Amino acid sequence: MSFFRSLRRLHRAPKSSEGRDGWTEVAWAQAGTDFYSHHFVALQPILNRRRRIFGYEALYRSGWENRFIGDPDLATQAMIDHWLLHGLDQLVGDCRTFVNCTRDSLTGMSLSLLPTTVVLELLETIEPDTEVLAACRKLKTLGYQIALDDFQLSDKSDELLEVTDYVKVDFRISDKEQRKDVLRRLKKSGVTLVAEKIEAREEYETALAEGFHLFQGYYLARPALFARRKISLSDIHHFRLAEALA
Image (cartoon, rainbow, N blue to C red; front, side, top):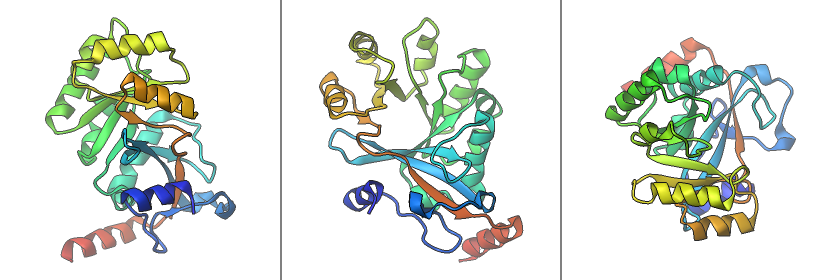
């Protein structure tokens, strides 16, 4: 049994669909070569201070290998498709699920097609210009929460922090003093602090001691890969209609 499955049993995390056309967790030994006939997604648990599952980060995958190299805009659009057409909600349930967002997906408002349990995670490459801030404010009024990935203090971060619910701090690239500055700046802001890229016990214990609220990284759980066999759009519409009638 994988560590991800044991976490699901211990903390009542959502179960994967086990049907022929459902999302199924894929072990490396099960990986096949025919990746064109499948959709893929990886889920990495995000834990609270009691090491219980708070939510997940949903990561687009383009094949059997548990990694992604490609266009971030296409990856974000694929994640939207997974929710709307391929039943990703069956896998994550009503858990908070972080999804990486690009500038185009924000300003184009395509993210408003997702359920409001999705946390919109802004990539660190996004410049917080007027258009981006306006899109964030509008999405907030629709009920979405916003996270900042790989956060570092800068002159441009103040306005963005006003619409932010979660701040992720990368333990691979930040040192103690940098984290101390972030913690001091955000102490009374109401923002939830997420320690990410936690890859050793010492880092986890440091993050606990420094006052982080949530934790994500290989030390706690690696992303689990899920696959689902592709079906035609006509079949998808048929299934959705059957669900609605039921």
